[in-house]
Image (cartoon, rainbow, N blue to C red; front, side):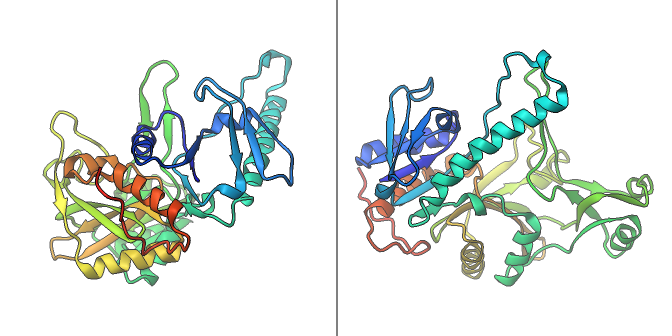
Length: 345
């Protein structure tokens, strides 16, 4: 039995579910809000989920029947306090935090009850920090940018003068803000750091990550799944808007993209990196420099693989469904050497 943990609005999960249906796979799909409609007895091997607006029927999860979990995307639903005026703001925040902790304890109980199964990927590896990523990438033989995390202006000045140009980026996931009065969302991007930027900083500031700026020929998005690798080149350097961070999409004139083959040595190092981090799947970003060097930037365990699947006709939804299907059938799981053996329909 396959267990899928994802948000209800994720179209990639919908697509994979459709393929699983075609294959006749046995799976159960749960969303974060399902865990607010739950009944279970600790020590028993089943959990009941009542019908919700997203899942219109009751579900029963038998923990001992699960063989693989696809931890696709997860977002904690907000709590609605019916009469916020009755609470001081500090008490309201404490109540919300308490309820979130209570819910997390339930999810953690179920997670810990599934330690005997394959996770793609386990929640503990799904928020691997960028410093840890860079460390493991180096150990796996990948080239990484010179990086510093500091709260010291003097250390930053020294780092700045040791490179031709530097950038700043988030240490964890990028910040995403929504304008409550519109549908506009704001995302933090990778940005270049100038001398005047540094001059404006106080002597001590919040710990931040800085890297040497790497000249690019093209940027490469890689999707990894159990030892298989698909890649796409992004020609981001022909547009000033996308030159530093290709996620600053120019919708009027999108970057040209094309299928790409990574060298075997880099593929081997990617596999070594994914094994070291315990990730079965993920989307990785690389730079190919004008001198032909491949520089690893980061991995997103829950990355949007659709951005390379459609332009390159990789059919990654089907590849994921096939991997899940085979994993559920395979008695002896070998996470990173699984063969894609499902016949074409």
